[in-house]
Image 1: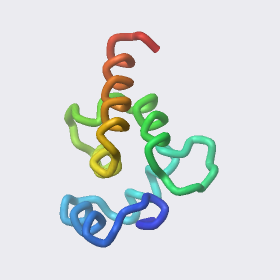
Image 2 (image 1 turned 180 degrees about the horizontal axis):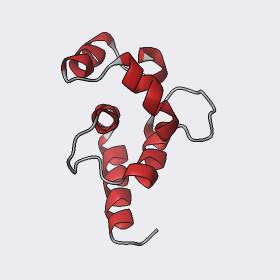
Image 3 (image 1 turned 45 degrees about the horizontal axis):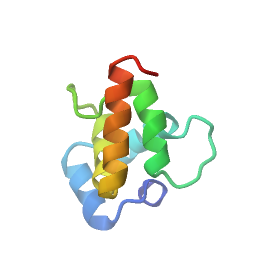
Length: 95
């Protein structure tokens, strides 16, 4: 699952120390990949996640939100802006 989500050893260690398990990653992979393509999870998959769960910053911070946040932290500044704008647009009912 570490490779599927694209986490390096340090990022994976941070997630597990924050309460995220491999089981969580298996259980929530579908939230990031609703089409079941089984390709590595990345930037575009966060849009699927936001469609299903909304803002990744808002509590409660379930395991799936921690995973989404870890993916978000790996993005470029431009990608972070695009995801943030998308979350705001969804929240404002623009989609």
